[in-house]
Length: 223
Image (cartoon, rainbow, N blue to C red):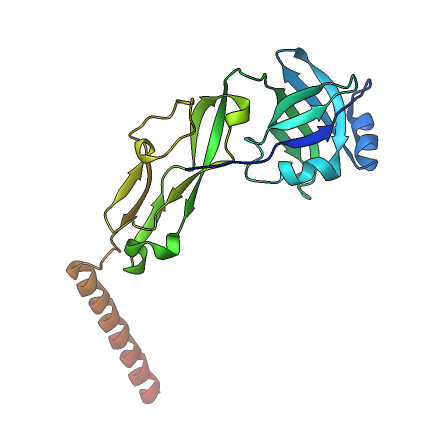
């Protein structure tokens, strides 16, 4: 099951100057310096966007699958995806963003996050099983307007020992799967039991500690 999302519209302003000093002044105005790459901007188009407008998208888990409608200075709109977000090492504030232009009707390769739901209802977890999520995203080629926010995996019926693979997921229509179908997504395993050997070892260690403790007590009494 794929979760649909709303497209976001953000104004793009072209900037003529680049460089560290210029970018510092841009950020001081509550703007983020950006670069737009793509079929029509192969050399990259430098610009700025509102920090307040882009932050919720750039900080979300769905940032790489959210289509952004960039309002260009000529009045046209350019569809784009966030490809890279550079942050300050300490504050984690956004310092720079790379956008990639996508064309309507043309497929593009994206990584779609996998989201697990209904963990609390899974029989296997209720019985004490351990949930293991082996794969957190899958790679597909898909048209921009068909990109879902994520792929939802419902494990409400999953029992101990059962597994869900990529081939078991419901994918968007007209999408080409690039991740291997036999890739394990999630499974619930039996809780690890303590073996008899380990129990014997624990008992032996406990007995040894007790003997040592008694020995110290006797030495103290003699003193």
